[in-house]
Length: 364
Ligand code: NZQ
Ligand code: ZN
Image 1 (cartoon, protein in one colour):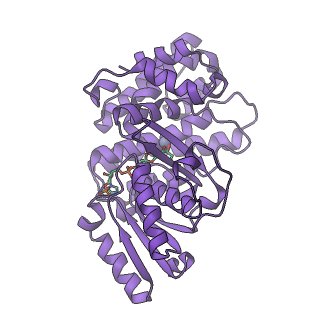
Image 2 (cartoon, rainbow, N blue to C red; image 1 turned 135 degrees about the horizontal axis):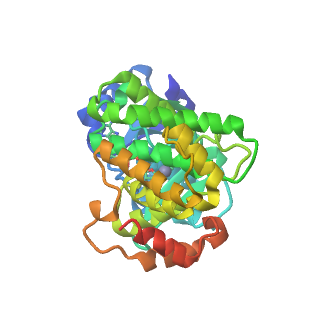
């Protein structure tokens, strides 16, 4: 049994009620009991998981002598499992890791039983956690946080509701976008893989929204989730990740779901930057969306890309504007200033403060 990778005493980490409702929890509990694996349970990881919850998880792991963690859920549960796994052997506060205050150490092993196709957390060493006190959402990477194993059964995603299915699809695509718009030559192989992932997600996300138990659609999304952010398509290139940073501010300050934040930021970002990345945007429009750019100027590419994304989001039943998700007025300058307090413009695609403000304003 896979849980043997997690040592003698396992923590089952879960989100809200979905794993109970679907019957997944009782299936796992049954097979753990059958295999004679001792375990504790911790429920309640919320979307955009909080470092406050992770602190409780660390305490529980120490008290109970936990040797490994099995995350049962989507990206939030897996990321929280990583935060706990990373912090158990760290004497200070778990948030220190996310503020990059401490050096790498020796995390507990973890496994993932994925229930939502989206983040790629099941196949990478990243954890993204939020700090409600400071209104920050930061990522932490450690090679020891790659899951020892991940179980990817598309049938476990049949119960994912339409909006979360759509947000997940947008997240998968966004991971590809972040890595696709580089300025390098000769990336034919990476481009081919990236284009295949994007085309599969664009084809099958609307199918999964309309037919939740369509195995082929769910399988394409789940495989896309893992392939988009396991390091393969970005090998040898430099990713951008500005939109993820802009999204993290939206989640941290206004509580948007990750995929929702990306659905509003990316169309505006593309409109803003496409003319500077003309070759890549022509490739994107032609090969991913089957939109001819013949006779179009560089300035026309941004609005074309924006329209393609907005149309796709509409077909999935989700909005492309901040106002679709958030009733309060977005605190744009506060988000930009917060972002610039820990990221330099060079790490944000060279965009200036005013440009970052314009991108948010274009998404209101
Ligand atoms: O909590 P439960 O009841 O399980 O419900 C969840 C949650 O409400 C529900 N859900 C999950 N699987 C389900 C299901 N409902 C019915 N049936 C199922 N099979 O879906 C809701 C959202 O779950 P969540 O885990 O929050 O979604 P997602 O997988 O999109 O994860 C988002 C988090 O991952 C981070 C995001 O920032 C966000 O915090 N990311 C992690 C990354 C990484 N580790 O590499 C990269 C990403 O860019 C991202 O930043
Ligand atoms: Zn993402």
